[in-house]
Image (cartoon, rainbow, N blue to C red; front, side):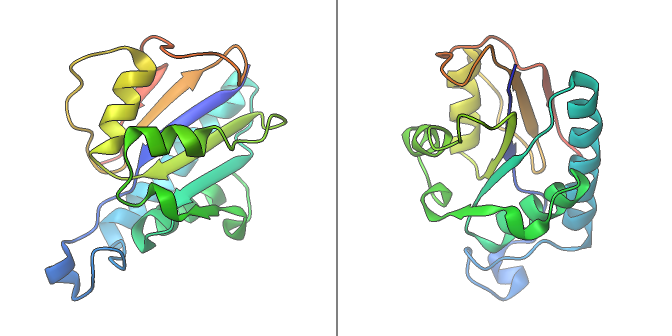
Length: 164
């Protein structure tokens, strides 16, 4: 049974506070710590399920790539194995669906890291849980699937939590 993890990037200061554009905003020390806790939690959860997470996809924005790379390292993967997906930046729920559809059929589990507000929309659509409050930085929603071909809604996520 594959695991699908949909996640929001960890905490980052605003673009003006960072002195960068929105796309280039980096995580601060708090965000890096959240991303590492996310990776450690997901590694333990996946091990308990007997289903490793072996695919990581993230928005190409700096903060999401940093979150995904820290989580990948926590999962025992090379940080460079994270696949950037420019379409996840400023994406709609439909664009998230297109990215999810690119997860290889051989994957045992996948982590997809992106942004609000689309994350809340896709988690709500995939779970069938409405209304869903806005998801905080470093939130993960973990779904257990029968197969990658399973059609949503899946029901409530097995896990819905953040690492703030």
